[in-house]
Amino acid sequence: MSVKKVKAIKPPYKFEEYMHEITPLPKEDGDGFLITFPDLPGCMADGETIEEAITNGRDAFAAWISAVVDMGRPVPKPTAKPVELIEASGKFVARLPKSLHARLAARAKQEGVSLNTLVLALIAEGLGHREVCGH
Image (cartoon, rainbow, N blue to C red; front, top):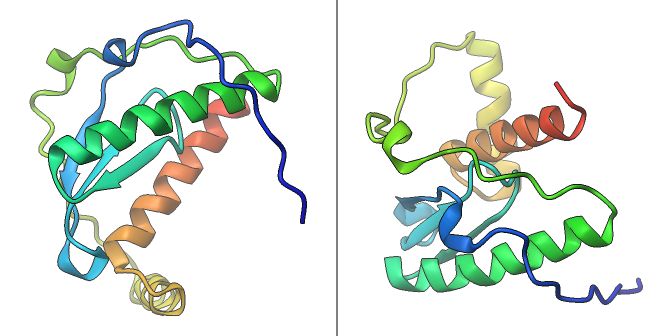
């Protein structure tokens, strides 16, 4: 396996211009906090404290931007404003067919993560795919 070195670039927009969400991680996922960026699909980091998650998020942000530019893709403009997302609790309940619930639970167990973490990753992956494909 070879590793490609990606040249660090100066981001066209500042870290502070992008909305980021910080959520607590459950015990089964190691506790701590997860930081994600709605405008940057798949860009995320974690940390034991909120401050550490933000610090690690800055590193993830810089690496994500550099990788996107290296791949020749455009850097998404910051669109989400903190005020727009104030009402969102970060929690919702969804009813699933039992067969789908069972398949998701089995996959989460196989991957060694919680069901919530698996579903969040699948949703983020799906949203990222849609945005890359222009949907």
